Image 1 (cartoon, rainbow, N blue to C red):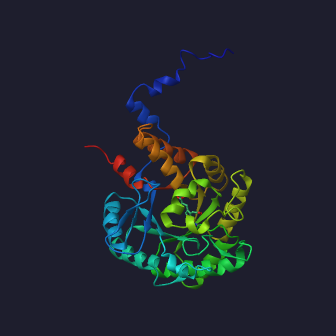
Image 2: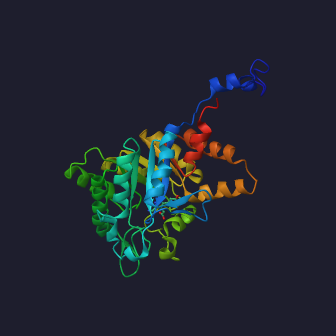
Image 3: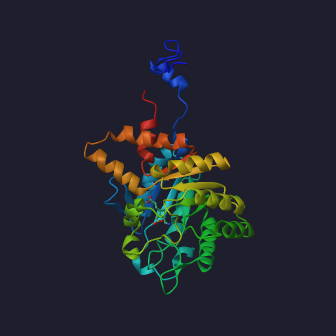
Length: 335
Ligand code: PBG
């Protein structure tokens, strides 16, 4: 058989010849239903503070956040992920503010659920915004993050968040055994329908840089890193192991993070487990695309939509992205 076997009877270009046919054969679609919007909240009132390394992203005080979320709700975005900027004066070695029932997060969660009951609210379970050293857990004298002691605090944090009314808790700390401990505690406290979105395959990535600026944990962290708990970017099998454990321990949704450099991981996890799978297009990915667009080097709308479609193609069911409101606008039918 020659390499041209079939030609001209077989011409793959025929189905690309017009938009109607392209629409019919299109395999993947991005919709507003796929979007989770991460937002930053800080204390104060009337504040909307720009994040330098993330043009278009702001730290909102609770009141301006509500105004912004009214727009987000109107755009039909189903869920937000809330990240707090914590006052340095409240940061301690053990991050105990993380479990304060009168803290910033529970106050804001209650306000959001009161005003936008239909919007799913997801909160991060991890200590890094609350620790004086910027690590996600409690450290020993050598700076090593202690797993089991940290779990006690994470459990308190998660149960407190559930009591405040969040729809999903999202442990992003990468401690061993946290999903099982949190699930058991949620059940014991009667929060049977509080879902767990587990940051299961979370890599020790340099793409989190702008996020750490946004929440102000970069200064705390200094030159130390998170490599003793977040995953080595060189590994794949380990991601499958982490997901298997999290699902066995009671995770409802698993997540891969970062996104664009880890599409192979998304695909392997979706193929192997066939469970609800989220991917996080992280702060550094946002910064990268935004910077190129602002320089006029890339067409923002086209590259953002292409990057999100890549996640869908890789098997993701939902995408956390700072572009969510913009994407929702782009997806609106033009009349
Ligand atoms: C903290 C947390 C991080 C992100 C989400 N939760 C940063 C980190 O692990 O240092 C990163 C999000 C982003 O870069 O957009 N546990």
